[in-house]
Structure formats: C-alpha cells, structure tokens
Length: 432
Image (cartoon, rainbow, N blue to C red; front, side, top):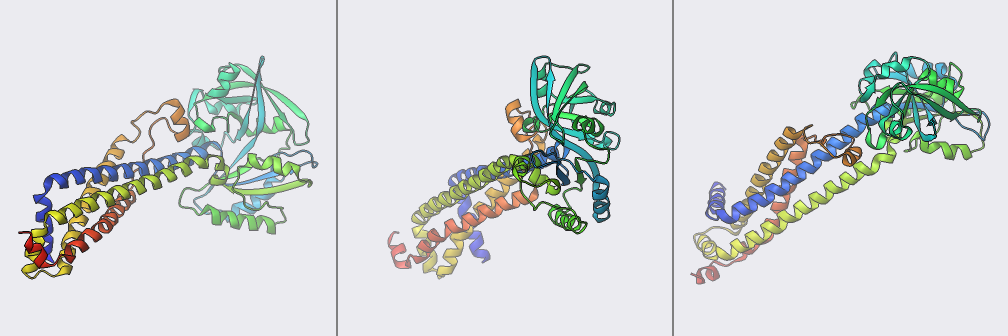
C-alpha cells in the first residue's frame, strides 16, 4: 500500500501543470461553497438577533381578546394569572419581559403612516434597549408618559424630528377609535425589512392608555432564553400548563401574531384566547430569505460536486491513456489489478483532499478576517439585517466542504481506475 501511495504522489508531481490547474479549480470551488455557507449562517444568526430584539422573544405567550365577535385586540386580559402559571415552569436561563403590541397610524400635519406598534417595559428592559440602534435621542426617554420613538422610515414620511408632536390613532379592544398626542423622543436607525414591523415604540403605559386597556392587561410575555434552550419543547409544556389552568390556548401555528388577527376576527367567538409562539413563528414572513440562502447553498454545493467529478474524471481518463506503457510495465512486473485501481483512486483522492482543504481553509480565514468590515448598500442591508456583510464561518462548514469534494473525487476516480486495471499487460506492452 505504501508503494502504491508513493507511485500516486510521484505521478501527481510529474504532471504538475495539470495537477496545479485542477488544484486551483477545486480549491476555488471549495472556497466558494464555504463562503456561501458562512453567509447563510451569518444571515440566520443576525436575523435571529434582530427579530428577538424588535419583534419577539425566543418564546412568546400572547393573547387575543374579543369584547364581541366583531372586534379583536392582541392583548392578555388576565396577565397576572397567566404570569403565575408560566413563571414556575421557566428554566433558569430564561428571562421574562412584558411587551405590548398592536397596530397604529401615526399622523403629523397632512401626513399619515400606518405601522405595527410595540410597547416596552422601559424601567426593566435596560439591557434590551441597548440592542436597539438609535439615530437620535434615547429610548430611556420613553419612560416619560405620552412619548414615542419612531423608525427612520416613519419619521421621514411624517417629516418629524425629535421634540415634535405626532398623533397616534388606533382601535381599542371594544372597537372604538382612539387618538393620543405624543412627543417624539427618539428616532431609531433603519432596521431593513423589520422597519415597518416595529416602526412605533412606546412604553407599555402609553400603549395601555392608547388602547384603552386595564392596568392588569398585557400585550405579550416574551422569554429571552438563548440558543441552547429547546423553545419548541418549552412551548409545548407551557401550552399544556395554560390549558390545565383553564385557559383557551390556540394550537401551534407557524404564523406571526399579525397574520392571525384577520382569520381570528372572522371567527364567531368572544372572550380570551392565548397563543404560544416561537421567534421563528413570529418571523415566518422573513423565512424566504433564509430559505433562499439554503437553496443557494445546495445549488453551489451541486455545482462544486459537478466540477470536481467532471474535472477529475476527464483528467484521470487522459492520464490512463497517456500512461498505458507505465500500466503495462507495472502489470508485467506483477502489480495486481486492485493495486492499479488503488493507485488511480489515490491520485484522485489526494488531489481532491488537498485542494478542498486548501480552499476551505483559505475561505474560512478570509471570512473571519472580513467579519464586520464589508459595508453593504442600503437595499441589500435590509435583506441581510446588517449594515456589514454578515459572515459566520464554522469549522463544520469547512469539514462538510472537504468531505463533499473528497467523495466527489472518489466517485470520479472509479471509472478511470477500473479502465486502467482492465488493460491486459500484453496490450499495454504492445504500445511500447
């Protein structure tokens, strides 16, 4: 076996021009695959961070309240009772925060803009508030009654700045219209596709006043648990506990709370329904981005696999034709067919392994070096949830690329190696 390995290495060095060309092609293809995987992972991580900052906790316990069948409000009427059921079941790593949610129209002068509205517990959310990117002002100022923070997009459409007065219009739980004059105390940075999903930030107290909710009402309890917690399993336990406590709980559904409002409004019931959802449910309308990157990764992987298989197959087939005399000599000296097969397969495997390891290593190092340093145009930044190219290289990605290319190299080597082994020593020697 060691002799076969030495022969394979020698042949690679003897045909260095063809070998170098294949090395460069396979290395480049492997590097591209690792780069796409790093981008997919980076976008997914950034999306989760942005969604759990603006829209959702890792897990949410929300509710829908209908005073009568023709109106609906995204609110929990008996928040203290729900909290009493939920808190004893929370893992130690989970933190519970209360937020409000709803929809409102902001008006200033002749301008009107509708957006989703979020209520914050300003006093208890100092850590969370630091994750919002603020362009002007401070979100801590929301603790002052009747104040609002607007996204940059909304402020530009309304033509207002910090210190101006705007009016918020919304529908109360009873179906009546209500309006509240509020002072703009902060302008938040652009948040890409999420800019309109949480364009209006107010305190929970201001949201209660605008929506006409009772003091014991709450919009949603959000759990911040981190990536290590199995939120699907925890959500199942909370649903069952809430049902046993006498609450009506909606079945699990991969939809954002805003997408459930209209279907639930058409239903003829009145009263309270609770809903337990994950951050993936609440950001389901953004799934096309990660799904698209996953499809792109599969496509690039298929192209890389095809390049490796076709390139090595052609190269080794040419090598078999050029080395007929060598094969005949080795066979005449007693080399077995299995050894000939092993020699050519080792050539393909060595080239594939070396090239893919080189390409994957360079790509991983380059992605690490470029993390947070490549600025994106505004339109692309909105889709990728970041002002800079979100790259997150992982060792597992490099290993996957190397395994894929090596398997492709092995498959590409089978036919040329079998063809070389099938050459009888006599016919090979006749070509001398």
